[in-house]
Length: 81
Image 1: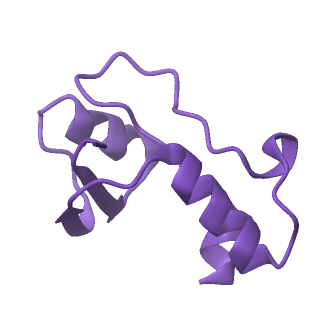
Image 2: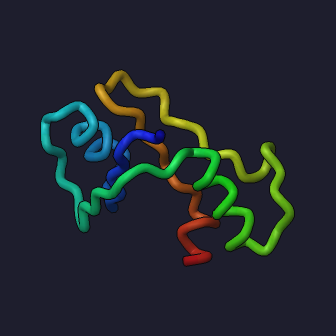
Image 3: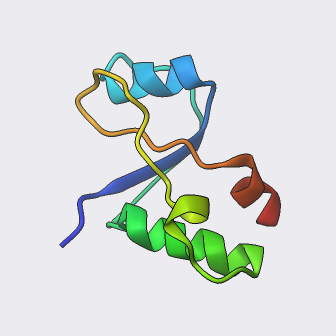
């Protein structure tokens, strides 16, 4: 079972603040039950119309010291939606 997920629009600093429980300034906070980073990467390849390739589509967490992992969605994925 995957952990709960929150999706929001924010600057990198505000996202880190949100994930550190200091309530950063985020827009459109949407919480839902789990989706894994692999599923999000697979969705990225589907929306881009490309065969899945880890080197191209893998979404990795930011290297930030926070209570939650933060994944920054690539601009190419955001532009597909």
